[in-house]
Length: 61
Image (spheres, rainbow, N blue to C red):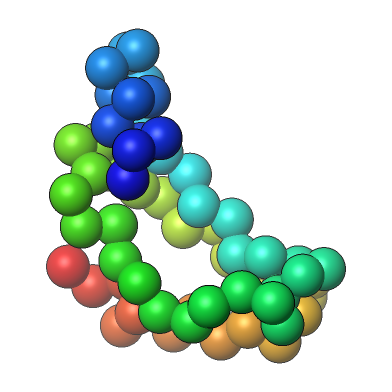
């Protein structure tokens, strides 16, 4: 959240989250962008995201 809010202060209109590929197994599951002062777009390319599942319901507010 800190980076998103700092980006907003610097003039960004939105943030981007990329589902991990190579180190997917080392990441934690879950979490939301609660507290961001800008909208966040989730970029998910299933073919290279190392079997991480991101169903549409996971990004619901």
